[in-house]
Image 1 (cartoon, rainbow, N blue to C red):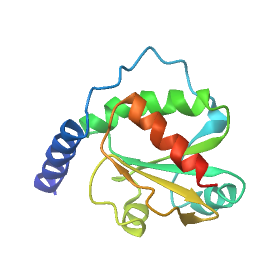
Image 2 (cartoon, helix red, strand yellow):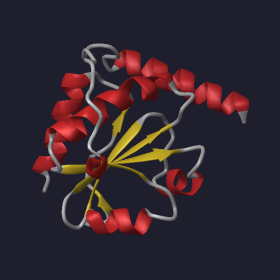
Image 3 (spheres, one colour):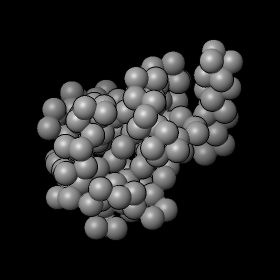
Amino acid sequence: MSKCKRFVCVLAGVLALVTGFGSGAASAAPSPSAENVVTVTSANYAEVMDISRQKLVIMDFGATWCPPCRQMKPVIERLAAEYGGRFLLGEVDVDQSRDLSSRYNIRYLPTLVGVRNAAELPNSRNIGYPGESRLRAWIDAQLAKG
């Protein structure tokens, strides 16, 4: 399993570099508002899907050992607070919630998935950390889908 984790991490790092890793500056972030960020597990998944019927849920699949995941986390949490409840950020640790990563067929980290009405939005996946400006544009595109 260790080799697999290393491979995924290296692949995610390469993908992040190719897609613009580091092109967005991460500034000092205020603590995100608790109502805009939730850790998603099997135990509360149904509740999070219920929330997706009222607003966009962005599922953030990542891991503590993944460098691009660690770089993106404070930025996307800050954006969740800045957007003031327009979306809910659902953080999924792929090591803790393997069933959810299997359900969403997650192959690379980090992966963001837009969910509305308990279904993945079409063409909603973002793989890797593209930098803050591209991340913000991706979030805006997901919000525009409804």
